[in-house]
Length: 462
Ligand SMILES: OCc1cccc(Br)n1
Image (cartoon, rainbow, N blue to C red; front, top):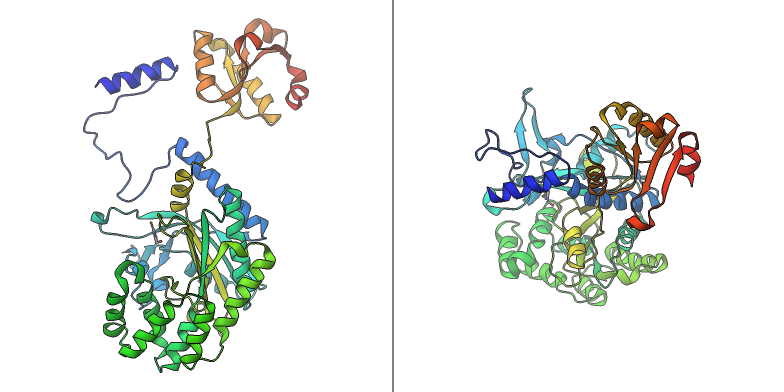
């Protein structure tokens, strides 16, 4: 009760009106479990982040696309034991369609590329910032939604596509003040492990489930992974050990040696990796990359290079992850294999990282001008002034009710972060004038400008 009274007093002081809410309101006021409201004060940060995503994608010539958050479940029916497909936020709709809130964007991108296959000129460089969903048991207390910046290139077989994606991610990191002292990007290729499995006679359909199991290594440890390789992926014991040995390689040379010992010629995987590091150096961000033979990523459809951005201090979950998925489009109906690669970049871990580094931007509420009618019968003229200022490009917050005291108008202007306040009073207005006060300076230095309305444009330019 005291807090409510305190809040009410603050609101009255600020010239605004609040309202009281029942102790037990008839509707729940918090958002559904695992989801977030973004109040205006929160959304200014989200807008700032998305603007950085847009700017980084635009700098590299990517085109923005979007699609419904609702998708058919068939798009995600992959039998590889992935968490993302086992946690679909799915339901059967009124038409009897099995649909779901999308758990990721890549399948939608593939569907859309195939939907216009005859008219698309490759390579496609598309990006989007979709909200993606998962249904997790509440006790996990984890989020059920996040916004994930997706950047993809469809139609380029060369690893220059992966390097372009990495360049776009590094561009973003630099744009928010993150350096390679804060974040590095692990790079690996699934091809080497794929070759080792093939050389050991493991059927290709085991490749994806094996990758999904290997991706759990950090979480469940080598023993449990080995057990799943044997029990779930049905790998022979010696092959399981060899696959884990691949993941334990400390560097590219060791991986090359092990590949040779496993009867795998110096295949594409090694060449891809060497090219990625060489091209990244040419691009100027080679010092952001780190080869990591244990990196697999958890999505079944990756077929080649995979990468993951992580915080160097190792305190946070992965910041971004991606890779090549050359077989997804043919899985959905392409007559030939269509090369593709992309990454997903969530909106949460990056904010945690920036917060931890004290690098979140200060984003106060602000407008250029508050227009304050001197009295109720000056509301119309105040609207005339607001329209004129807006036509001149100003962001104008028009007070919708005159305040009895000028002080309340100043309080309102301060609360909305106005740089100027324009009082619209009868006598000045009858002379075609409006009284502007510059709120960015202290009282004594305040220049009082009686502004002639027809000088408005010139003054705004000034
Ligand atoms: O990255 C896995 C994932 C998918 C959908 C929603 C959320 Br939160 N997390």
